[in-house]
Amino acid sequence: MSRMGDVLAGFHAAWEFESDSVLIRYERGMRTPKLLSALGERRVPLTALSGVTLTPGRRGTVVLRAEPRPGADPLMEAAAGQLKEGCDPYRLVLPAEREVLAEYYAEELRSRLAGSGAGPAERFLVPAPKAPLSFKAYDGKASFDGRTVRFRWFWTGASSAKWKAGDQSFAVSELSGVEWRSPEVFEGHLRLLRGDDAPAQADQDPGTVVFGLGYGPVHESLPFAAAVLASVRARGTAAAVPASAPRRDPADIAERIRHLGELHEAGLVTDEEFSVKKAELLAEL
Image 1 (cartoon, helix red, strand yellow):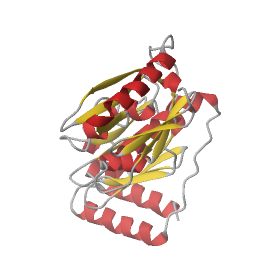
Image 2 (cartoon, helix red, strand yellow):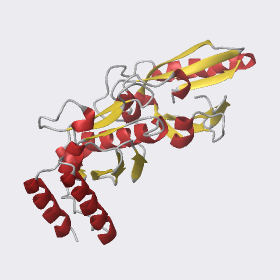
Image 3 (cartoon, one colour):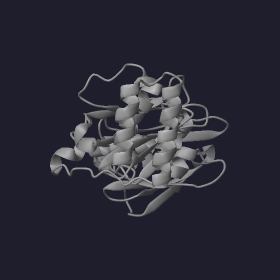
């Protein structure tokens, strides 16, 4: 930009232009999409962008949008085109009377991006949301501490297949990727991609949490997916650290054994499965 620190404020966000990046600060308020509020702010290096457009918007507005390079932003990679227009973190909506000013900044950005790479980025250039992160899905709670993803199943939502498998813990080094299907569509879920033959059905796969109405909302589950994906892509730069199993609350273990007994009495768990799983739970005390 011609001057460092110039700011262009629009609805729900403000862009601060620096010599090598754009700092995007999202407003926190009832009218701001929850995903943008959750992101807070993001610094986007100019090397992560391939272009910029300025187009007419709705109801007397104009829209300035920066185009991220494929592979540059873990959030957009995880979203895989599923975000609604209003949740696009690279979109700045302004009053139409600010079109001339917006065009000035658009031209400034274009001049800075001229000659820069527009193809896929070799690595993520935009920082991912920081761990620890967690959210509640329909059938369990997902948590990520930066090294390990953990799924803890809920009594009421998890399938018998997931109960038999037990709570899950996946080190980043075990994963090859993440599949996020928006909770705003049918069969939304977060699946951890592994090298094994995982069940096709999300509710049967112990490496997947299933979304539902009010569970796994976009502003919680998508940043989670992006953080995991970024860690998976970066895992080759550092030696994998073995994950240590957390100590369990004795009351929680007792409750899980009680529920296991109910599954056994209902015929959903065999005698052998009941004995083996009960022994595993007792060993965690």
